[in-house]
Amino acid sequence: MNDSQLPPMGTPRNGIKKGRFILSVDVGTTSIRCHVYDKKAQIRGSCSTEVVPLYPEEGHVELDPDELWKGFIFVVKGAVKDAGVQMHQMEAMGISTQRATFTTWDRRTGTPFHNFISWQDQRAAELVTSWNRSCTLKAIHGVMKVLHFVTRQKRSLAASLIVFSTQHVTFRLVWTLKHYKQVAQAVAEGNCCFGTIDTWLLFKLTNGVIHATDYSNASATGIFDSYQMCWSQMLCSLVSLPLSIFPKVENTGHEFGCTDPSIFGLPIPIMSVMADQQAAMFGECCYNVGDVKITMGTGTFMDINTGSTPHTSVNGLYPLVGWKIGPEVVYLAEGNAADTGTAIKWAQALDLFSDVEHTSPMAYSVSDANGVCFVPSFSGLQAPLNDPKACASFMGLKPSTTKCHLVRAILESIAFRNKQLYETMLRETNIPITKIRVDGGVSSNDFIMQLTADLFGRKLQRCRNHEMSCLGAAFVAGLSVGYWKSCEELTKLHCAGDIFCPKRMSGDCASSGYDLQRWERALQRSMYWYKQP
Image 1 (cartoon, rainbow, N blue to C red):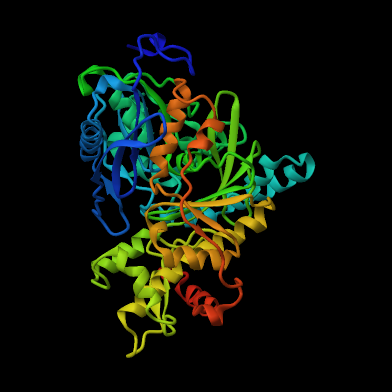
Image 2: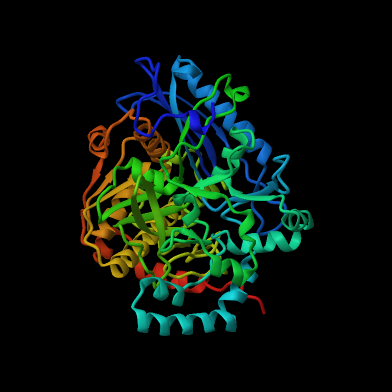
């Protein structure tokens, strides 16, 4: 079966029997998970496997494409088996992936030229810093400010404020073209494909037929113009990136084709491809302007629905395409902190605790952190500070410091970064907040959830199902084939979880046992630590 044989979106397929299911896979930073969903959006079967990052050099973070592919196939087959159903009962497949992790490959053979370069990778940090300080960028800022003054176009204002980041693909791809000769040669021969994980999976699943991505993934690369809804010709010309290597950008809910029958024994329609944070937003049913979603996993990602207008940021919030379904485009503004689950996992590796579930009781077992502050910046600091050279650190250690104090300091730091992102979002977007929903593995920590609610002075709702990226991709795939009919129907299926209401005023540090000002001083001391002489 090819694209032309698929029925129109929203139309049930001929010959479909009752009791069919939606298959959804989420390729995250630390794991690959697959769930089989039924009509009530309940998980009927699941399977997961670990994603093992590679650290070939200091600052380099990579993933093995072959291992990622094997893991993808393993979890799909495992989830279907766990559900006690058959592949032919899968109505459609949805795919959610970590963003801005990319590779390049041979267009003819599909063989990658190098490992995936992770969104956490810092190899282009010096290049990013150099460009951000360059006269070229300063000139662009000046010209665009004048254009914005004359035209009042938000696109010009956005260009006048642009600051490059290592988390975006742009300069990691520039680095790749410079350092991998086989990539540069393939570009010259017209034989190079670029893609984030979703694009590469589509290429593999369709046996090289489809080279595509969706708007949500494209908008997270840093190379996509969210105002014009296309790859940025101006940026590509500026940094010498060839447009020929980029995939076609499709709707989030789209008939991407079918899996090659040799993979799962029969073709399965791929009906949605989605970036993980946007997928989590969709899974949380944050469909209205002012809805906020916070995902606390490997990193923290805070997104607000800005409706049909992309946000123009001053302090590092990034305008993203949330999703495009049919003609409707929904935009988000996003801030992130890169080292949330990373910090907790690091602390566990140091034997500060044996089980993550022990961390919340440990933090509550002491009245405060005994003056200890932790700065969670293994990968630098993101919005609103935007310092890739910041270091992770403990400060205020003394002979009376215990493991419980250290653990509490780590958990407090996650909530403090949440507050920074939240205040930046309020200040920049000026959009009234309607609701705040929280998901991700770290959201299971009651101490972090309660302290975040206290700091926000707002009610937080923790979803019963922490893995919302999978659900979001499943929802879009299901809508695309008429399995579910509308967003209103999906909202009714949403499973509300625990509610965390603020117990103290956000400024009442003394009674809460935390010292935000002390932590902010520690933060300042950690900044620019790795600055080159």
